[in-house]
Length: 359
Image (cartoon, rainbow, N blue to C red; front, side, top):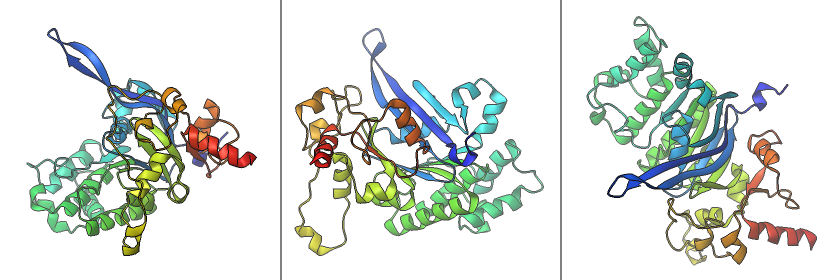
């Protein structure tokens, strides 16, 4: 049997999420927004998976599926080896599981009830799920506030009385209050000042180390994602185009889209102004009618005719001699084939690498 440490806490297999589009004189479904279209990955216990990409590529949608706010159109989500779709049939068991899967939202203000003060926001879920008793709940709340760096004087105040960084700390405290194992951090620093961003990122890393948390960190910038993540998955228009160790992807990107994201990161060096940057042209495609073949090909500077016809699959960039089988890809994405996997979905780059290997 496999060691529990080698079994992913979260595993996703071929997940799809389509939203119906209604229209017509007699209202009917005229099409679907393919927010997530056939995604597979895993998050190992105690690690952080960074999910990066442009707005509209499906990052937040994946997060909502993982914590049970929505159910996928197709595919499977496993928590600790258990299929969440099957657990939905058992209301009591699913209620227990929900406390283990929490989310920190992008906008902390809209995620906090403006009519309740902080004590109520934190205490009510803890009492409802029997995490604490009435006699100990205040003590437990003060412990959580200390973890996130807030004084006990915040308990009687309302969300509108705090700064953005303080509200985000309250959002983190709210997620921690139910003793979760897995937390989705949905762009938790994108609305904050740079100095506050660093504080929140450091806080997340400290809490993960202290509590043994497993995280999915959703973000736009590869810099912040690389700082907190063990692995990174790069998404474009509902699909994962590159997946691997954070340092490997940050230092040796393979897919043209990943390279473009790195090129867009500002460098605090005046000399770098002279360096030419290959910035992406055009806008991200439509999720209702995605491009044929490789979805990135309309914006890719290396696109060839086959890119317009063939849907690329993930290749192991460490061993470019052959394409991974479906089973191998799932195992490697699950971390069961070693920690050095680096996969990318770009037939042009892979072909070039093959030629280099033969040369």
